[in-house]
Image (cartoon, rainbow, N blue to C red; front, side):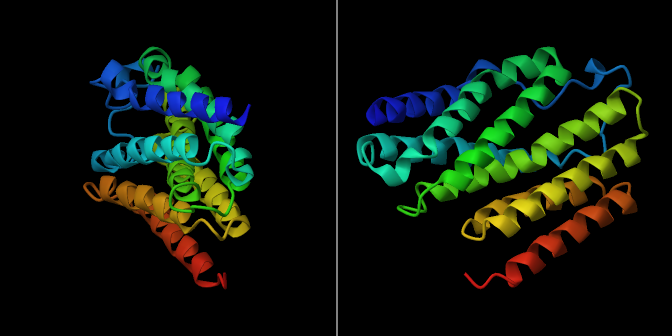
Length: 233
């Protein structure tokens, strides 16, 4: 059965990576898909940050392929497969859903995140650069992207003005990232990936300067680095 799960996970990673080819022009939620159009929302990172998806797709394919062909029967690799499969299977349909409904896509990305975090915590100690590291980057990016979706929904549905909506989204992202990194010291790439997203939020809010959003993102970076600095593992 373990080889079957490994094979299904490898196929799911391929399907997940095929998303940008199925929806090639996706650049984020359509601004006009919300009752209040979201043109340059302050919660959204600068566009260059989304290039991280390329390494994530490739690393997950390499990881799950290695898991299938070299570690299919290894107990150390078994525990994370089912939750990661759930996350990637949802991720394979996320882009088409995102073009139709930001609300549905936001719900799905939170399910993807929860499943990815479960997989990350269950990952074993063998082959860390092929087992834990890609999961850490994937879960780290989702830990930023899912709260960003909350900020977009709060602003897009007129619940909060743009800056308060962004601050709520960032606060959720920072709280989540700090809790996860505190509980999981063996995956430093998780925090580094969240920092990548936070730097891009700062870049997006420099012209014009949104000091509240950029300041909270900078504070989050300092907090994550300080937490890593106390790590003795």
